[in-house]
Amino acid sequence: MYTEMIVVIGTAITFFSICSSILIVRHVKKKISEMSDVLEDVKNGNGNRRILSETHELTAPLAYELNDIILSYESRLSACRQTEETNRQLMTSLSHDVRTPLTTLIGYLDAAHKGIVTGKERDDYIETARRKAYDLKEYIDVLFDWFRLGSNEFYLNIVTIDLTELTRNILIDWIPIFEDARIDFKIDIPEQPFRVKLDPDGYMRILNNLIQNVISHSHADKIEITLSDQGGNIKILLADNGVGIDKEDLKHIFERLYKCDKGRSEKGSGLGLSIAHQLTAKMNGTITAESVLGKGTVFTLLFPKQIEKEQELQ
View 1 (cartoon, rainbow, N blue to C red):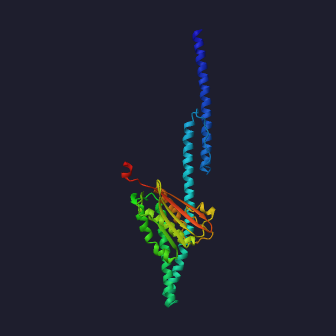
View 2 (view 1 turned 30 degrees about the vertical axis):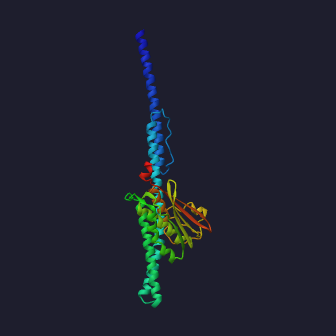
View 3 (view 1 turned 90 degrees about the vertical axis):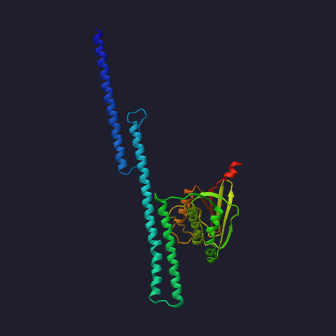
C-alpha cells in the first residue's frame, strides 16, 4: 500500500512537471515568436518597437538585452540620417557658395586677360577678382574647421594663458578692417591678466568667426568688444548696432548650415557660428546670443577662470 502511494505521488509529480514544462516551453515559444515579430518590424524600419516582458519571466534578460540593442541601433540610425541630411545641405551650400563666386572670379579674370576692359576698369576687375579669391579661401578655411571638428582626429592644445593679452593680439589685426569698413569700434580690455585654460588657436577662431559674422551680416556701423571678470568666469562680450536677428532665427543660429534670411546678407557658409559654438563647448565654455530687430545683437562668451596658486593658499 505504501509503495503504491509513493508510485502514485511520483507519477502525479512527474505529470505536473511535464505539464509545467510544456506550458513553460509554449510560453517561451510565444515570447520568442513575439521577439521575432518585433525584430522583423525593426528590420523594416520601425525602430520604435519594444519587446514587453515581466521581470520574473525566463525570457526577460533576453528581452531587455534586445531592447537595448534596438535602442542603440535606432540612435545610430538617427545619427546617420542626420549626417546624410547635413551632407545633402552641405553639397547644396557648396554648389552655391563655391560655384557662384568661382564663376564670377573667372569672369572678371577672363575680361582682364582678354583685354575686354582696360586701364582703371581693368585694375578694378583684378581687385574684385582678388577679393573673390579671398572670400573663397575664407569659405574653404571654415569648411576645413567644420570637417576637423566632426572627425576623430580633432585635438585641442589646452594650455593656461592670459586671455587679455591673447584677445588684444587678435583684435589688433581687426582694427584696420574695422576702419576700412567704416565701423566705429570700442574695445575695453583691462590691464589685469585673466588666466584661463583653453586652446589659443581655437579661441582665435571663435572670436574671428563672431567678428566676421558682424561684418558680413549685421550691417552694423558700431561694434563693442569687452573683457571682464565675472566671478568664476571671464566674460567676452561682442555687441553691434546692426539689423538684429529675428526671435525665431535666434533659436537656430548655432546650428550647422543655418542662415538667417530676414535683413541679412546671403554671403557666408552657415558654419561660422556653429563652429564657434562647438569650439566653445569643447573648451568648457558657453556662448549665447541676444538680439533685438533694428537695434543689434550681443554675443556673450564665458570661460572658467583659473585661480592662481598663490590665491588658493591664502
